Image (cartoon, rainbow, N blue to C red; front, side, top):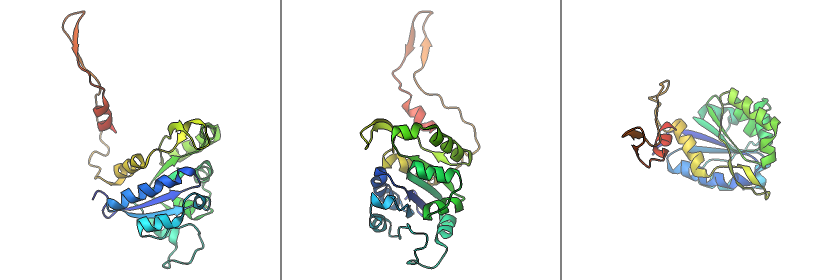
Length: 222
């Protein structure tokens, strides 16, 4: 199990893409992770917290003042325990709050208290994603050490086609595994990876080459 003994906090915001996180939570649990899900009140309109509680075996946290759990300052306790926190889907509203230190619900207070790596996966309408304000907020998050996953392009729930689609659960899972699934033996090292076809000249006109796409090199570099 890649993630045995690791604690993963998943923050789910109000987006139609929230349903994908159920699959992500299941993947993480199958790899031995202790998964805790936090939801905004708007996220509850898209997927029921019971779904996450059933998949993870842990209470889904929504209300900051909910007392129906073992006594502790819940957002602080989870922030201390988490090895990584992923906010996916990350709405424009919550990205703005995180960028400017606004902590007014369980999810954003936990983000503020977390010292572990934080990963954001924006999901929204293309025009919202391309809005300069949103882009500035993402830059602020990056400046504070958060990783931002670029959204995919495709057909969106609003009917538009463009950037703003949250990647599939398998992609999100790979980001989490990359962060906490392996010992970072190469951290701080600089490695040069070459990719693509090679050419060997026969004479000034002709050369020998191959059909390499470079995909393996790109995968190794990632």
